Amino acid sequence: MWLGIIAFYYFYALHFENSYEDVRAGPLWAPEQVQLALSYFYVFAYAITIGLAVWEGGRLKRDGVWQLAPGRSRFRVAAHTLLPVVAAGWLVLVLPVVMRLIETQLWPTPAALAPLFMAMGIVCAYAVLGCALGHLTPRMISAPLSAVAVFYVIAETVKYDEPIWPRHVSGQPDTSLAFGEEYGAATLLVPLLFVVALAASVGVWWIRTTRGSQWAIRGAAGVAAVAVMASCADVASGWAIADGPITSGHATARCTGSVPRVCMAETGGAVEELDRVRGEIVRSVTKLRAAGVKVRMPDTVSDSLLNGRDRKAPSDTTWWLPLSRDAGRSAGGMTSVRYAVLRVSVTFPCAFPPSFESAPSANYVVNHDAATLWAAARIDADKPYLAWRRGEYGGVFQNPRQVLAKVQERAANALKLPADQQTAWFHKEQAKACRLVAQGAKP
Image 1 (cartoon, rainbow, N blue to C red):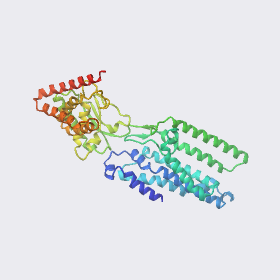
Image 2: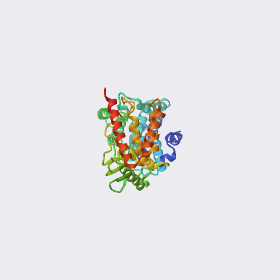
Image 3: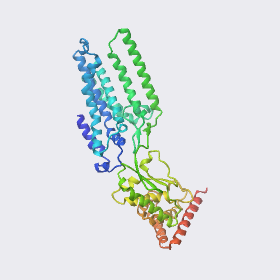
């Protein structure tokens, strides 16, 4: 059954949005790929483990093993019995990780395998809990019920908004990883300690000693477990939804040149285009400057994949561009790189509304976009700019075709002018767009 579960979720669910070719094309980051591979299998591993452990615990009770002469410790007996159970739970986790690493041809790292080790520890804890439950309840009923209960509770934690801590202590990390990111220690230790503390307090009941000492040990273990679990819940309650502690900036980069020094992610899927990408950036900036656009050659241009989820804003000297994404496209890759340069370099001497909907007036749009389209045409990036604006207009304006035609007409007329007049036209168009946006903002 669990082999069928692994096959279905790996070959169908994991590739529902991204085909095998898209996955191998990158960007490839081992911690991210391991996290994706495990995302469907945590809950199955825990549910299968506790169901099998309940069954084995009930078998020990049925066979009267605990009433036999103590030739071996109860812990050794339980470990020997639960070994196949733990192995089954581990295989549910290990197989998809191995398959994903083989598919992506990535080498595992300790940080990449950290969530796997966490889940393997939790599997051991559920084996202990299941064995104890099988000793106390009829296994024919409690084995399937416990498996379904664990599956349902853990699967439903992703819907919890208040309290929020169950999302983070369930053993199914609520926080996904992006390129260059790794889980913080707390993200993985909190769910592990939460379940292990409960399992350890249950395992203490198997210790053989004098009756007085036995109850003292059990009581202390119970208090310690409650304290640890409460501490874990308290720590996790301070995290936001899908926002457990992570660290970023771990991806390696390959760089070339100086002023600008261009860096791309080593496993971003397009690092072999690094020299071409730098050439396109230099040529684009040079052409824009020659056309009269006020843009400075940056000191550094870095791949936005290396930026992490806390995106750093570009500055005059440092740009963050989607170099791997754009250069890795099968068609028009260098055009996309030029378009990215356009978006970050062509600026206006005033601020514009973040969207058409938030603007008091749209009178500035034609002049603003005509100036930008002219600059895009000077570096052969007009097609992606027009495609983007066409989509923007269609969702806001009642006459999107007319607006786009007017923008194209003004830019085309400007491109027919002598070079020095084109520069003057561009600055006048910028000034007019700023004047119109200021007029529209007045009450």
